[in-house]
Amino acid sequence: NSLFVPMFRTNSWPTEKISAMAKLHSSIISKLDQIFIDNIYEIDRKMVFKELGGTETWRSLREAIQSMTNLTGDEYVVHSAHNTNREGVIRVLVNSHNAAQARTFFSQLQDQLRATISAT
Image (cartoon, rainbow, N blue to C red):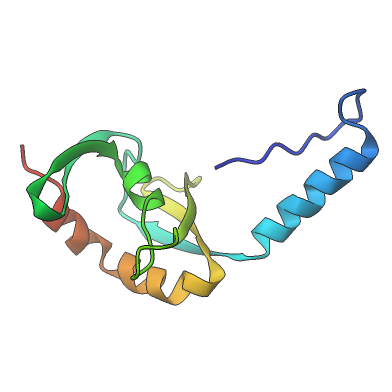
């Protein structure tokens, strides 16, 4: 997920368009909370995850985190996951109304990873 917000006026990006994009960006950001998680390295390295039912899929930890849904499975909880300037620490942006559920999940992330990452 990314949102391009131009900084300079051009023919294709007049001031009004830039202002509208900045307002949209501010609106999206205001609805997010952030969670910092320690001991996460190589967030983009592909690995095998065991899904429910035993299916194994290759994906990165970033992809797995960003596909997390709420308990009913009808809404994505995570907006995006980012590396930080601190090695081994990532920042996860979550929808504010799902922040409590996300904090509970991420507080147990190491256990979740041990249970779902295949040893193969």
